[in-house]
Image 1 (cartoon, one colour):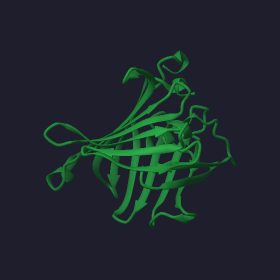
Image 2 (spheres, helix red, strand yellow; image 1 turned 180 degrees about the vertical axis):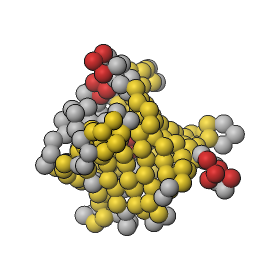
Image 3 (spheres, helix red, strand yellow; image 1 turned 180 degrees about the horizontal axis):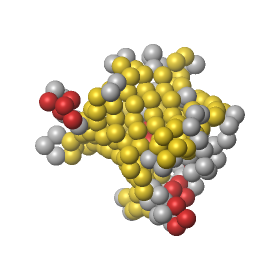
Image 4 (cartoon, helix red, strand yellow; image 1 turned 120 degrees about the vertical axis):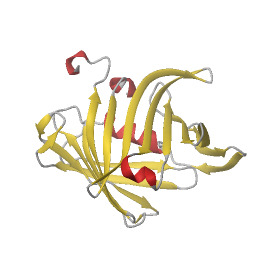
Amino acid sequence: MPPSRAGEAMAFDVYWIDLLVGKLAVSNLGARTRGGQECHQVEAHARTTGSIENLYSAQYKFLGYLSPSGKPWLYEEWEKKKRWELDGWLEISPNEGLVRRYNRKGLRGELAVPEGTYDPVSAGVCFLQRDLRIGECFELPVTDGKDVYTAIGEVSRGPALETLFGTMDTLEVSPQLLWQGKPVGKRAYKIWLTADGRSIPVKILVDIEFGSFSANLVNYRPPAENSALR
């Protein structure tokens, strides 16, 4: 259930090759009320930094709202220009088997989705809630409101890495994103998580068309209700 990690916050430095180019923060904000409904909110905030800002400056927020039972309900994408502006959002209706996609002009389309489909933020929440074990395979349907993709992967034993917490044994996951059974683009992802039962992401590697990017965990706040992790 999502509340098990409520209060958790992670901050990453993002590098393109060896050049610091951005910051990524992920926060599990716990129980909230939105539109009169009880929900659970998770936020990812990405921004450029360092010398790259002389060429390109950007800030984005991706917000996921889940029902108290952990099912995705609402997903929003924000961009900071002079102020934060809502670019688009998804309304997920599991009972109808539909996702509705909106932008500032209104409804842009409806998409029929299979049961258990996640938006990008709630998919990350679902993944981190799993009791990850070596050899475990996972498969999650994920939507952006235009298409339904399948995220697949297997958990394997990772290397011992120098981390924010010292030298740690890790679990390694190399997820793939498929559309109609075929990989989406020439992309490769790797995620290393602590193998101590907490499954904290300590390093992320992404190879895409623009080059190789890595994100290293530099700050961590444990779940608020788990005093053993304070």
